Image (cartoon, rainbow over all chains, first blue to last red; front, side, top):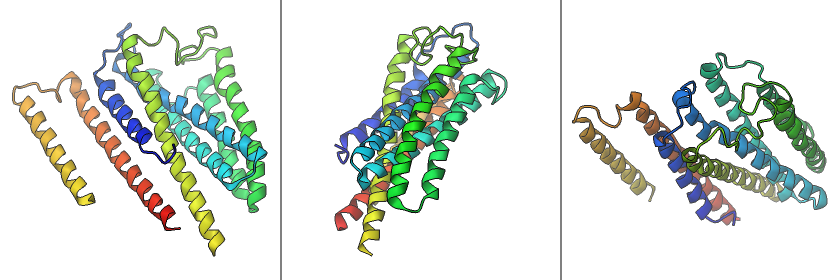
Length: 226
Length: 69
């Protein structure tokens, strides 16, 4: 499955579709405060969806490692966490660009911005932790335990705390539900681009992660041969 | 094999340029409509294609290394 080609091609086709039709598709005008910048929905929001999925796969492998300690499980957990963190960083940066023109400044201390930044710092600490332990078995085991903690910190920082206070993000009044899938934020035209975009970006992240895992395993094998 | 692909891409690119040029002869072409937003689309698509070609090359290189062992 991982070595097969079809899902890599699917990812390419979905993203090509997103990047072409995403500019053509008719978007709701509303009161014209978003203008064309609403199209960022096809690029900025899938970063967060992709990040959640990639980090979930990472914690899945970490739990798998704790049950069955193999180098493959550890390499997969680290690779998916790295790609997920990169996606999150891209989400933060693209969000800052969008916010600069929509909310007036790149960082306005919005609860969701702060929460995302804290989540990213928690994940960065995961790599610092891994990097600071030289013993491979210890590194993998402590990393796996920390990864479980880090994943469950995502929920309060990204999903719960931002909804308890006023936020500039959609869904910020506390009772509007999920800002990404909320019926009020997207019409059917936008959905035909948004969901393929989420799948496409996520598959791209999976592809990058598998390449990273394969590289780690190759480097490990080479080390064993020497 | 790789050279063939590069040539094919160049041909495709020139073909697209011709289409765009042909459309622009009639005054306001697609690329200049809507505040030139489609220029941005062309840039994004080019980056996307470039990224995927690069990723596919890295993938192939790693597969080759894995088969050596």
